Image (cartoon, rainbow over all chains, first blue to last red; front, side):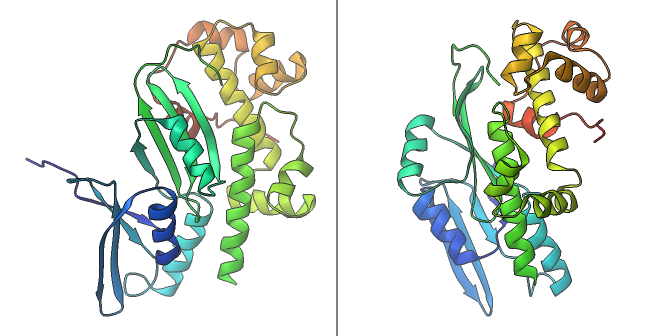
Length: 143
Length: 133
């Protein structure tokens, strides 16, 4: 029986820039940062024990040949690769905090739905990040 | 060279996000092109090349998708829904809706109720496919 999701990977265009965004802007903590030769194993995670590690993977050698890396980088920058969904206890408060930290690339301001309040933003490279505050909200549907 | 492509892609994505966010407003191509910091002509050409459809068609499909959402989830009148999602004429809305969805807004409403999927999933996955420029 599988008991937990340990590591999930997303592609970023630059590991240093990704680390700065995910830690200093979004508020995650650095997990592993280990160099093995030229390769840097770099993860971030939601602060606290037992959180899934998000592996920040950069296209290029030794994982990819140049042509493959170029294709991946194009897909990342047009937002065509995967993203992440986080849970928060205060979507509107977090929205204000993120704005104060200089985040501008919001795809959606906090919006109420029958399942909670969610918001969307992009990381510096184009990956989509959704953040959800769970819980019923007694508001009529709006587009 | 590759970095130029990535930089342009990222700016085009930002412009596309602006359409997804502000579809209810009277957006014109010039305004959206400005988000990507490119000329209008270059914007239309490069957007089509990167995302496979013109910016105008992308926006119309987004507006129709949001109108489908409101028809399913609310009891607002078709006219109100039309204005809610950024169309200024009921005739244009009805024609566009029929062209893309294949039935009238009223008929669509009769046949469909609320969908239990998060809004972000609906936004990402339910933008109707059938459309012509």
